Length: 176
Image 1 (cartoon, rainbow, N blue to C red):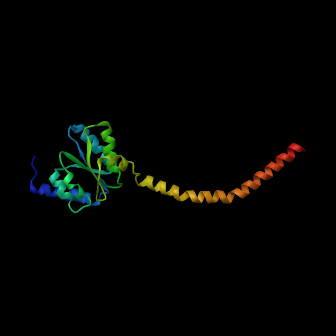
Image 2 (spheres, rainbow, N blue to C red):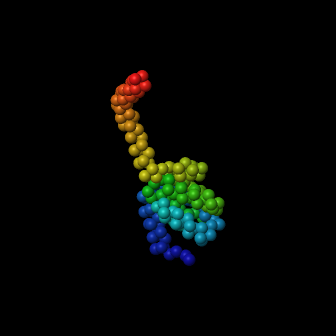
């Protein structure tokens, strides 16, 4: 079904709005995937809060114009599905990487983060980035460590005194 001009403008506006607010984008070739597999991919993307859309490359080029994903324009060739991470930069990479483990027909072709075009081998690195909750937990652990060490240091003289007193008591009980 051919798209008329108004439909094309609506698609460009929608994708452009998503791209303007996204943290990262991945274009993956989906040639050979069945409808059921594409539906499965969409479900997994939705659960990770990743915007996933199959759009003509010419419309995608127009949509990413003026966004930080403008660097992808020259690389958009072939049947591609666009995945935009909405909340954390690694979400789209995780969705594509995890799905491609079981479906070898899905192949990442273009990756962009923060206006920088990355090589396709970087998908592993990008997918291993922590999400927001994991990053906060890691930060809290780093912030908590010096305080814990300080408290243990303050507590050590008292603990050592108690151990010495207990040892003296045990020695006196054994000798008496």
